[in-house]
Image (cartoon, rainbow, N blue to C red; front, top):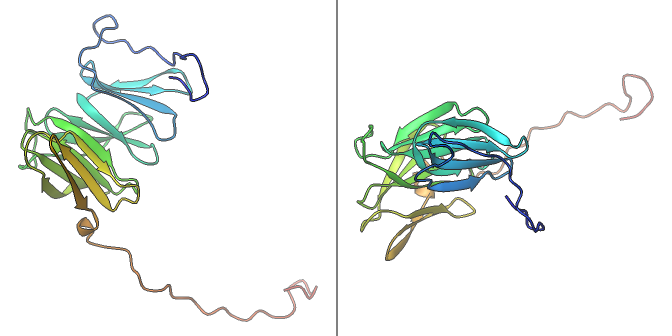
Length: 214
């Protein structure tokens, strides 16, 4: 890792796989939004989580996830596995918090490899590109249930990315970029009605202590 003002690389931790330090097929290395962790996707067919502050590996656990995305608060990491599953793991412990499938059947399908993962900045939605059909699956982070399947078409989706205001999702397949409206997935949009104010009871001119202060 190297900071913006640094001139030398600082080795934070060494992650050793089963092959004497040789890991085959690493697909992603991702820092958390708060800068406290670095996640490695497809390390020895697992996810490796490095604790930057402690300078050591926090945990190495399944699934064999190629592509990863942190939640905005950096408390969860989402990993897309080779069976089409997208799993939410606790960043500190690696314990599984939820799971859903980016497959048309809604169940595990070996070979339905996730090609990209993204979490909306407001933390509400998780998007995953999967397979070679150009499909994008979007799930609710709160319920771990798929809310929509977007048919981009063409080929494998290489990129899913939410806008900063979480109102749009961009998907990319070689040759085409599409923008999708996120608000249509929300079945319970926030109310736009003005807030109701409660009447305030008048205060007496004298406090309980008798000092005369309000």
